[in-house]
Length: 52
Image (cartoon, rainbow, N blue to C red):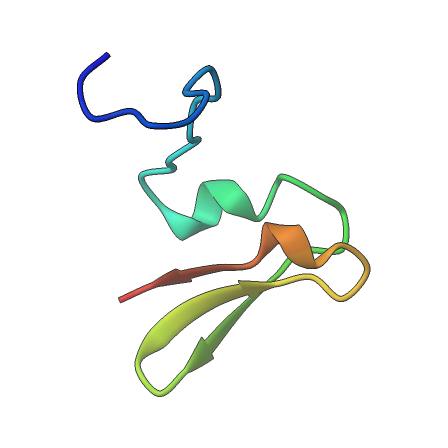
């Protein structure tokens, strides 16, 4: 593997839109702030996302 210094066995999950991230967890909320879309989740913060 080129340019991989550490264990690269994980795959990064990339979603094409924020709307699909809303269905990840029941507590996910889509919020619009300052022209950007955010996914926020207070119970599980690892589901945070931003678009725009």
